[in-house]
Image (cartoon, rainbow, N blue to C red; front, side):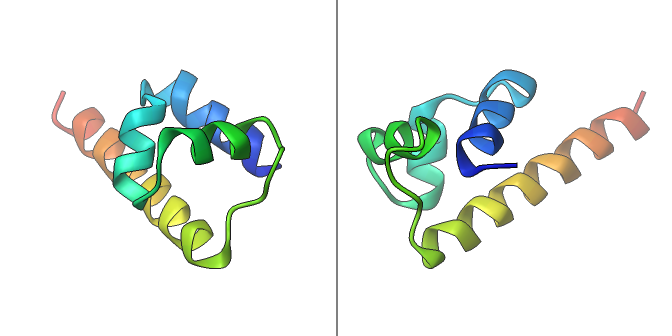
Length: 68
């Protein structure tokens, strides 16, 4: 999976916006857009933050499913 595909997954499957992703990892929406369109690859520090964000979102999804 490319970074672009991963970001599209967060947008579509998790309902996250470019702005929310950008704020969570500490960049502008333009950077997130460039990553999503495979114009640029995130620097390692932002890759780590994106992975952490995806894990956090996964925990939220799992928690909400166990509450029902």
